[in-house]
Image (cartoon, rainbow, N blue to C red; front, side, top):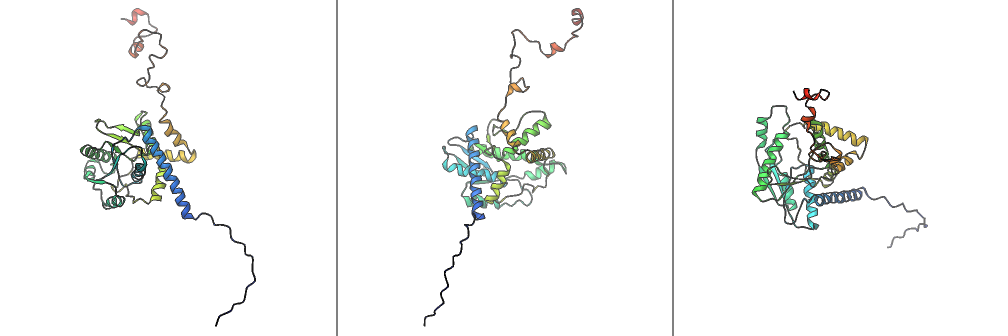
Length: 308
């Protein structure tokens, strides 16, 4: 027996408007835009400073923080379409800090298929023994870490050492030198080590820290805390960081302007005679007296008194 149902009269029901892009899709879209911006900024830094050449073997220093994860991730993306061939090897230094999760980085790097090396050196015990209780350990820890990484780079033939310092680090270092060391200097995007053996590059030199934090969150990197040693951030660096944060809040774009100014140095408009030949500027010939000559004697005394 076939069931029969009464026909309902046709009713015109207005269809709802199309729903806005789902939130998940929007997040993916924003994440892709951010990744594109970071690739552009890192690629531009590499080109501007000649950071990577054909045949380079780059040691990517990976700490487990947001900056070094982002640096490795963007370099891997650029490597696929780069105009030159180069090798990337991730290197981490296990400094034997308490509660350091040794499994995190190997598991992550193996999941990517990235060549890596974990170095082990108990610098933590050295620092704890040398630095007085309550004092910041970051400076000595950094020097010991740098020494271990440089030694590994030399032993294994790395031509470049990539560090994860970003735009905000470069600006902060400039102010630390200005305020506490009375000099105009900073953290260059590319440098030669003091012994002349290593070329250090900073591919994130044009990248904002906020963008790195957003990218790391979107990519869900397995972040390892940087305070496992229990040391406090250097007071001077903390003061500079707070100043920069206040500036960016009150006057957005100021840090970017300062970062750009670091690449627009004009020695003739500063006061360093080692960088600009002020002596020759407008000189009419002849020997110019030095500071000692200008300060010697009493300019108002007769000539015979000045030569007594």
